[in-house]
Length: 287
Image 1 (cartoon, rainbow, N blue to C red):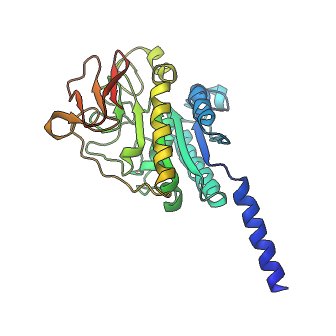
Image 2 (cartoon, rainbow, N blue to C red):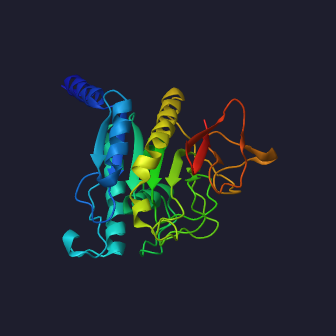
Image 3 (cartoon, rainbow, N blue to C red):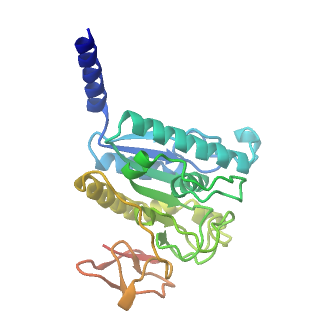
């Protein structure tokens, strides 16, 4: 009987593993957007389409800022509930499918909750005092890429910043902050955005999926393929920040770093064999 039970357990675990996708994308919407992926939908869809059999999952949280349309939940409470939802959903999925590569895509408040859950450090702006990374160590190793669009936690000088913003969002990270998974992140924010930067054009905030969608997809595809090819581990990387997006010593820019664009004052020459390629008027990247 013990042998039969063992065979049943083995068969069951094999069946579950066979049903797990190679890639799974988590998406979190912006404040007041109806349940779903929000403005991040096109980015999530493009990533899922890029990997046969890939699946997606919506982060279930209020996405509110005190508006009646989303239940009068305060922004701070919504963020805290969002971080909890990210933690529970990512950890639960990873427990069921431990070999699946994971991707995070968050827009605005959705970017903030992924930022808090993946990078840790707490969020004093919203009353989140625990500075530990709540996503499990096992799940951390399977997250290939994280895309933040219009993240209110933006501060200037982080290696993964993309765009023209050189200021802070309305819920900024503290000075000197570094995410231990910096090499896996791209955070998109332009100077005229009033939420992740200090601008005054709300339309800018809603435009990142169109403006940077193709750049984000290229980044994710390369990170997912690299993780799949490395046997499933992407160790945390501590990054020394020297400017908006990664100029390195000798005036050269590392792979994925910004190398040009309107207002860019950093390095413009990419390390070999990469070349500087323009995504739009404000951003060129070493690809």
